[in-house]
Length: 555
Image (tube, rainbow, N blue to C red; front, side, top):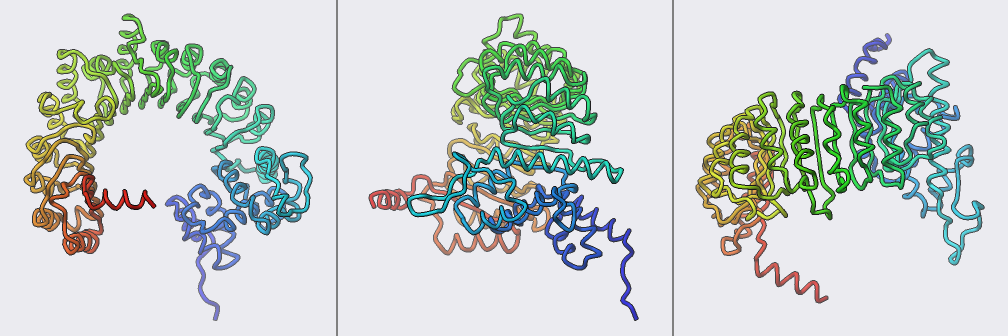
């Protein structure tokens, strides 16, 4: 009698659900059950290969995976693996090549057979015998990657055309791509929705034209840096050559030369742009922020000044400054706002928070400069009207807790206590007292994450903190002298279900109140066994640890 088997369509639904849950390991085991199941599981497995890293145990496994993907673009594998990929991460291929370069057996395995045509070496590009005086020649990673991308994208398009299906690949990520061939590759990826590039200076009119013609769903661009000599003009040309109001997300994460022409060009997508994250902006870009005034459909806005540049919004004229504040205040769908290293952020934030249409859910204010008493008080009072806030971070100038002492700003404490929907409050770089922490814990029962700094706080705060029913992360950078008995009582008051997985960091405990070894063992075991969590206590001024550090340094 034949064993009953699940119908193929049921197995397809199961594997699709595992793929949606990013269950890489489970899909891998399914692919090894039988050829019938493998034909379904493998497609879902490779469609989520961007989450594979935790399951790759060594560099040989990574090499085997990339070898199978590349060979599949030559039709030399059982399944067309590359046609299943949704996220093609070429930086992962770069890292794989770096890992196998010094390993002669592994690099010989990787470039064996048909893979030989993808090999490129730096220098004279000739394979020579390896000796002690003549080490393994380095790969030309850029050329190898380009050859692989060309083969993969050509196969992906051909496979989709031949089978009458859509291209699966929607996200392309790379360290660097050649500017001259990038438009060709983009033209083969009709379902491309996002590009993530280390060097955004490779973009220009040609790439945008290919996207406009071939990629109707393209909507997201992330550049790690964009600092070429003509990067500002080239990126502006890229924005203008895209279909108007098609870009929904633009991020630049590090060094860049963005300027007025770039920011002005973003207005070509004023109605579609939802996420705008501009990090490491130079003085010239800060001075041009007012040119973004048409982009009022934003839901998430991040503005960060380059850290070595101490100028801020004060670089603007009074009229330009007012226009920046008016622009952000007019973003009626804004949900997340992040100001980082902007010296004069408080005056802008005051106007934004006072705007009746603004309903923020996340606010991050870091490294700002003190404003007048009137502006400061108005800003903190207006904060209390943002009742939808769930995440709040306030960090003073230069990261010093003394730069923001809550006792000097009672209106700020009052406003924080009115934000009853807060789930995460980060005051790590602020000076908070015991009464203020107790009051915050009482007023904000939905807190899941709480971090704060300050001078000496007493044990009384532990009672109120233990009553937070959803607390799972607590970081205390304030000075503490908690006794073992107070921490034991705190731990035993926590709910094993509601507070399960809790992580406690006591970062500035007095060494005079140092736990004994047995006390530390009890706390660690209780948190692990009863709460599935952990507790870590640090003693920055422990003379024993300082002495040990000096001794180890002398060796």
